[in-house]
Image 1 (cartoon, rainbow, N blue to C red):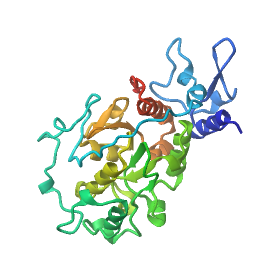
Image 2 (cartoon, rainbow, N blue to C red):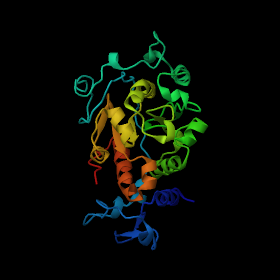
Image 3 (tube, rainbow, N blue to C red):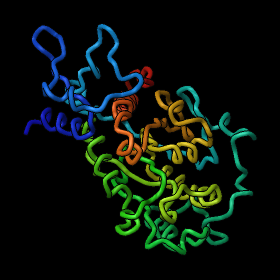
Image 4 (tube, rainbow, N blue to C red):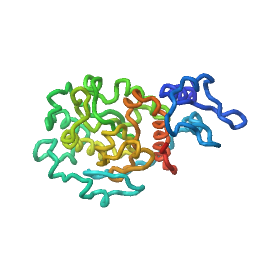
Amino acid sequence: MSDTAQRRAYLQAMGIQAWVRRAGGFPLAASETARDTAPLATDGGAPKAGEAVMDAVVDSAAQPLAPAARATTAPQLCAAARPVPVGPCAQDAHTESSVTSRADVPTTTPPGTDIRGLDWDALQAAVTRCTACGLHATRTQTVFGTGNHSADWMIVGEAPGADEDRQGEPFVGRAGQLLNNMLRAIGLQREQVYIANVIKCRPPNNRNPHVDEVSRCLDYLQRQIALLKPRLILVVGRVAAHSLLKVDTPLGRLRGQVHHFCATPVVVTYHPAYLLRTPRDKAKSWDDLRFARRLAEGRDAGSGQT
C-alpha cells in the first residue's frame, strides 16, 4: 500500500472524508459512497465556497514533515501558562490571578529532593514511589509516559484509564488506537512522539482528577517537558488543557489558537475518547492536527478554528 493510500485509510479510520483532485482541479471523494456514511459535523463542517473540502487532505497529509531545529536550552519549570501570542512567557505568564504559589502546592517528592535536577530514570523512579495523593492506594501501577526522548512533538493527555493502569503505558486502549491513527494521518508514528498524562495514576472509575491530585502531580509533567524540550505540545482533552494552561475556558474556545507553556507552543484539541463518543467532532480534530503540523513546521499556522 502506498503512503498516500495508507494515510487515506488512517483518515477513514478517523471518520474523516478523504478527497483527491480531478484533473480539472475539483475535489473528488476517494470513495463515492463515503459521503453517505461519514459522520456529519454539526458546525463548521461544510466547505467554504471556492475551497477544496478539508484542503484536499490526502495531498496535505502526503507531504513529509520538515526537519526542525530543536531547542538547545530546557525551559524552566513554570507554575502556569496562558494563551498568548507567539513569544516567550518568562515574565508575563506569572500573574496572581492564574498562578498557584509553589509554596501552596503539596510536594510530590521527599523533602530535600529537587525535582528539577532529576533525569529521565530518576524522575520515573520518583513517580513509581509517589504516595503524595490518595490515588496511589487504588492504582495497579503508575503510568509515567512513553516515546522518544528526542521527540519534537509531545502529546499530553488527562489521566490513565483501566487499560493504561494494567499495562503501565498511556493511550493503549481504543482511544490509543484512534490517537495512533490521528498521528499517522499527519505523517507521524507513535514512536516518533512522546506521550504523557497530567496524572500518573488512574482515578477510580475513570472520574476526572481532583484539583489537589493535579497540583501534586503536575511537577512531574513539567519536568518531563523540561527534559524533552519539545518543539510543540499537543494537549488532548479539557482536563489536560485546563491543568497545563491554568485556565477554565471551554475547550472549544481554546482550539484554533497558539497557547504557550513557558516558551513551548501548545495546541489544544479533543481527547480521542471524546471523539469515540462524539464522532461528529472528528473533522474539527483533523483541523487541529493540520494546524499543529503547520506550527511545528514553522509555517504560518493561521487559524485552526472551525
